[in-house]
Length: 352
Image 1 (cartoon, rainbow, N blue to C red):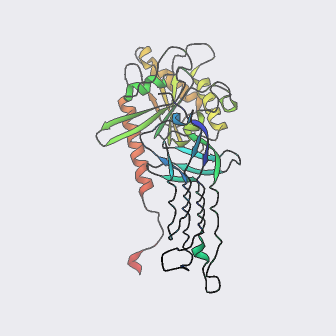
Image 2 (cartoon, rainbow, N blue to C red):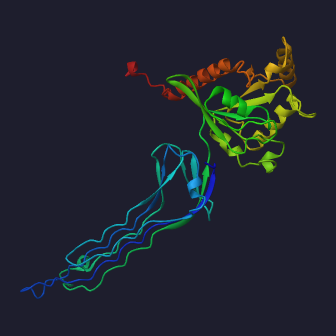
């Protein structure tokens, strides 16, 4: 299935049903009085998170979605039926924006979460509502109101615990294949990954995390070069970045230090490094003998002045990947426990 992470759609809520003007007409009751019922409310258009979806492909061709109108009121004080709501399923991580004004309408991140994007029109009232001691035969009613309509921009930001970043062909996809059941395309040329991929890494039955393979960045990506900013936004939802670096780059001018600094500049240009941790993962350790890979790693770290965690792996053979995944799991669990702790208020119940 094609991955689609942007969609422009139009939503139109249903119009409210008109109120009815009617009078009771029965045998032996010549002046029965008003009995016109109210109309029904128009249906609304609602977005709902479906955890089984992972793309906006359903909105690639169908662009206009309408909810049914409410029915008109009837005699004998019968209220018109309300229009059913139109519920549109979207994947987790969908950001909803008004396409005309740019207003942020909602951020859908939890399964079952709903957002009303177009409210159905209110019903009109029948002439029964206008009956009074001074107006016993009202002939007025009100029409139903128009439903809301909007042009929407839907944007999907993948939700993952860990994001893989790096230059094209640095081994991110191979690493994802090595540690999870995901099967992204792998080849020996740049920009093999043209869409993000998610993989679940399972260490034990109840210990797992989600990794997102983000398409490779190049210098100027923040201004639209290469694959541009299209996929940079997916990094925004990851709490930990694994910066994958090829220890043996294919061409000149792509030495590991330059590669690391290039990607870091692009992440900084989008404000993506301020609040998330980044670890260096040096790939292709299998291409070196003895301790050559360790020596090269240490040289690069020293030149960068890097103080964060560093790992040496081979995505191809799996060398070092178990230790990497175990460290990630420990980090995520510690972070989750930290976020789950109640805030300290200074209140001491023993002193009351």
